[in-house]
Image (cartoon, rainbow, N blue to C red; front, side, top):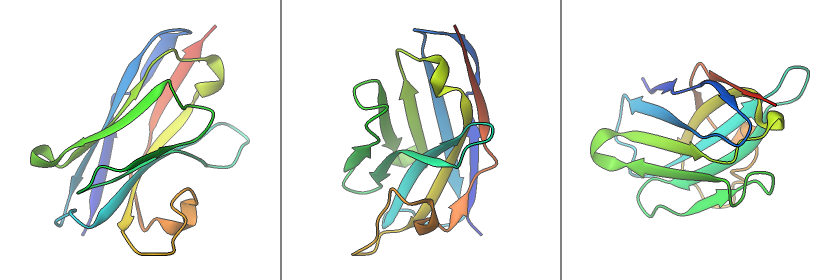
Length: 126
């Protein structure tokens, strides 16, 4: 049973930084893709960033490129999302997600992911 547990959310002023963590357990994740998504009130869940566990290949949504960085520490089975230069429009619940790496999948699509965490709230005040 895969379990993903997010932490690190909170309230921060615009221009500030937060680091989210996603602790993964339940199996070996060497052939997995790990993603971060977010959902603001009244909006659909949207892609933020993703990383392949073994190779560390990353990809970002245009809205966060240059401000956010996704990384993983294999020994800790943990994925991080470093968020800098935060804006009020970054306010949302942030979710960690996981799925097996397969050819032909679009990993910016939330439907590609099989496992989800419970989410952590990030609020950016202006």
